[in-house]
Image (cartoon, rainbow, N blue to C red; front, side):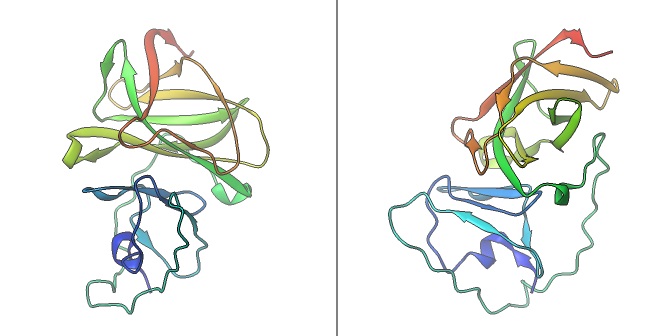
Length: 194
């Protein structure tokens, strides 16, 4: 049955930076904070992968559903500026990041996207992590082989797109950044994408 990630994984003891992911979403574990990311509930019929950062074997026994665990999916889905079908790619990598625009860490009201050439490979909006009082980006980048990635920033207020400085290589199942040391995306507003 569908249930929240923390409840579904209550039968194991996660380590810092453990990750649970599916094709388009993921969550990471931070001591004292719990699970954060775009993956909020585990659903029947989807496949999941678990990155275990400990030196011990973990066995998950999916718990019996409690009345809290029985959910109907009436979550409002935000329409993204960039949309893609994540099922077109067999693999992905995950990024935990923040956005710096002209030297200031951005809070919300924006979207980040990854591209291989002109092809969209993933996009997301920031999530507020209350315990850290910080907006963080949990980006899943889809792909099937090693290739160069570039990134863009979309300002929802001005409805303008900007290039993000730098690039990186796609690597299957890679994890870039974590909650305590996120990757930093740097944007200069002078680098407007026409």
